[in-house]
Length: 113
Image 1 (cartoon, rainbow, N blue to C red):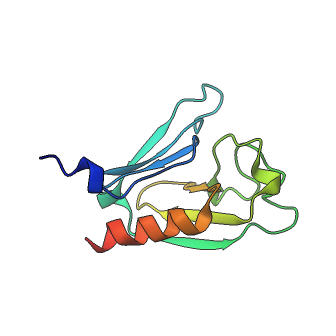
Image 2 (cartoon, one colour):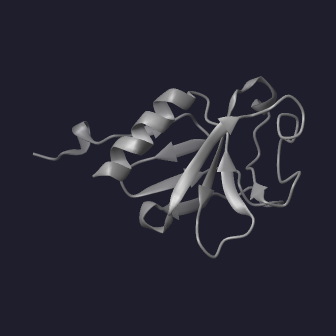
């Protein structure tokens, strides 16, 4: 029997997480193609409040050149910014999950395995 039914997963339409990778849909500008980040390439991550203005109204790209955010027209109503530490990648990939607690709990569970 396959273990796919028990696999920790998260998918909100823009961000997909499974035990192998994080897929950030609509990442690359201007093509809108996805970025797939293998979990073994991630050294860590930082979750923080999205803030009031700087990243909240940036729907695609970067406001500080330290991180890159995929296209997300719903970002202004979201609360949490997650930045991934991926060695050799500049700017660092980041995202704003629709369900941040579920995303972070799932990510922690997968990374502990």
